[in-house]
Amino acid sequence: MRHVHIHRETRETSIDVSLDLDSSNGGEISTGIAFFDHMLTSMARHGQFGLSCRAEGDLDVDVHHTVEDTGIVLGQAFREAIGEGKGITRFAHALIPMDESLATVALDCGGRGYLVFRGAFSHPRVGGIEREIFEHFFYSLCIKAGITAHLAMEGKNDHHKCEALFKAFGIALGLATRIGKDTHKVPSTKGIL
Image (cartoon, rainbow, N blue to C red):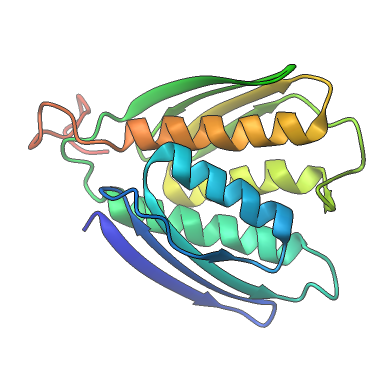
């Protein structure tokens, strides 16, 4: 169950995601948005999970629907891959520098979706993408995945801040979904996530 494939189709987008929590074999990531592809590739590579993502969206309108729906489908994939959560580490954090920038991510894969996002980009666009879309991507992913995440970034260069954030998120998510010592126990006092 830790390897899933999800397809979601709407009038605005068609998203196809394959996720493997136990393999770091990278797949093809193609959303039609080069900078977003770079961020997703960094997230998966540093998180050490296998990810393939093909997205087609109404990019003639703007990138919003494609980025948002990719977050939704990624969230669904993580939720399904985590399943009951037996054996996962559940909590993890990462503190990642990139030159003058620093990103911090702390998260809980406990079934409750929530996002706290601190930090701001200096320019209206980062990699050709409207800056507010990045927070919305993480929100969509976390709500659908049932992940509580606290994300923070600081620095001068928007590219560095954004890339450090995606890397930190990937690393923390990879660590939180790894199987720990108690492989048959759900990491919760409730007995379920």
